[in-house]
Length: 596
View 1 (tube, helix red, strand yellow):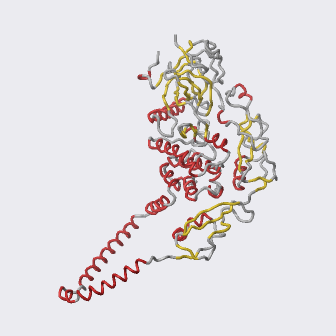
View 2 (cartoon, rainbow, N blue to C red):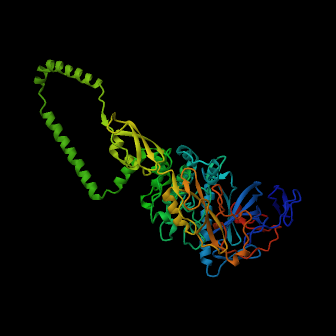
View 3 (cartoon, rainbow, N blue to C red):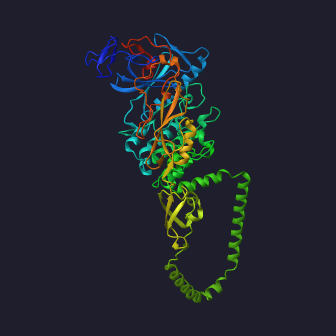
């Protein structure tokens, strides 16, 4: 008789049992309607356990691989927006008129995961182990989740990473993205929730097709606001490696500042995202500039590859100079090149004529021999004089300019300043000086210094406190833009909406309107109304792993589970009893034949 594996004690149990005879674990089905029941046997190899999460692409299950006796995660492609039901034997049935769309999007899913399987155990990537085609759909098998998400990790730390820590921790993720790009894949969902910090290093997970990561698509899309690139908010815009570069920049921005960036669709209307180094003093200017370059709103102005982004994060000035040279050469027209070549030829001709003229003016051999004695004496004297002059170093002195009152960004971009000075910086709050502007400097203006002197700048972080604006009953996007412009840190908690709230409106705040907010210490917790739950949705059980979150009451409240993990509609419930069924063929089996 075929057997499943108990998800509790990993013992082999006959299909059809209602509980494990070894540990007593119940096999009663607790998965939501539309999901496969607990203890479904997939491809004769994978025992599906509880449902972990649901999104616009389908369902993820905890599972046991009987072959390796290890825990894995299985993702089933079943986009509820275009699927009508599931038959009694588990087959997915697309909605009438959506058959072609279902077929093409399912093929996208299959091609994505086939390529990920071929990458094997690549650095920084959660390994995809297998692909199973069954039930008129496909199933991707990947490593089980380890460690914490980056969001959870930083929540536990309670302070942002410094630049070197962020680079050390997250560079495997940048390498992983470059690996995906070289294989023709885009991730499109990089965020603190899709990066896991494991005992072996940071790993990227959360793979998805284009439909899930693009607004207004036929599936129920899920974008990570603050991390999704501007072009992901429109089906009419092209996406490319630069799309993931934007998300990487946002990921590093969050890691070193502790703040979620302003959503890209709002930045297209008004870009007031503060530079990372204006938020925290320990962030080096070059590191902040690399992040800003990766997060440019216009894709053509953005850093174009993950590898280039990594290089800009690791090399302070050389990469910036090289990037400037590349940018200059890129805009040269054929006419410019003709002028450059003509100038080069002209310079070469001038050099030739000059050499000929010099040779013609030299004395003949007789004159040369007659004057050799005297010239030897004089040249010796000149040589001695020259050597003596070279032994005394020439010190270049410069007058220190007035940096006080200037914006730090303008200072570090000034080539004249870069030629004569090096800069260190620290930040402090100021009620009288605008954020990003120099408060004081050492050496003082007018002092004579040597070229290359280190100038220490104290830069304003703006006022330490701000007055909490009105947020309740306002749209969350407008609220985010307002809080970001004020420098107020925030966290969003999505709450259940039975129709009493307007969708996407803020319904509660942990800090009242008009109260003082400490920009360094306070994090405002905002409750935001989710999708309106219709009466029909009451028949759609919520996965047991998704708790309901009460409204925020203090600044220490944890964020609620993302509502986008709930399906809009569910296929007809499977009548399975939880005893287990066997379905599917595995890509790891010969020619896709079912395992006996």
